[in-house]
Image (cartoon, rainbow, N blue to C red; front, side, top):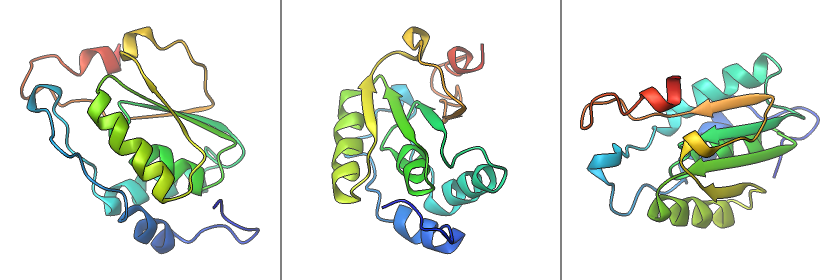
Length: 140
């Protein structure tokens, strides 16, 4: 449920995001690591406090389990779309969406094929540890 008139406190956001389940079987080739709720809530709340989430369209590239997508919804984004290339990650994201009653759309796509416009974009790219330059598609 989106924040009320008083907004959501950062601690409330963090506690809710701690309920986001991790990857069932992370794919090392895709460098799938879930961002901890403490870090995600810091990043999300910073964007929220700067007016970059509430009432805006948010896109989450490499959404994985949906941490940033769901957090954006919780902070009042008007529309949230998460993109990931991994079907197994999207299954977990969809389950997390249902568990947290989040209104978020998830789509399977290579980020190179994403043409969706947005007011704010979150991304959690691979670091390039397993596959050199794996992060380039996110940064170009």
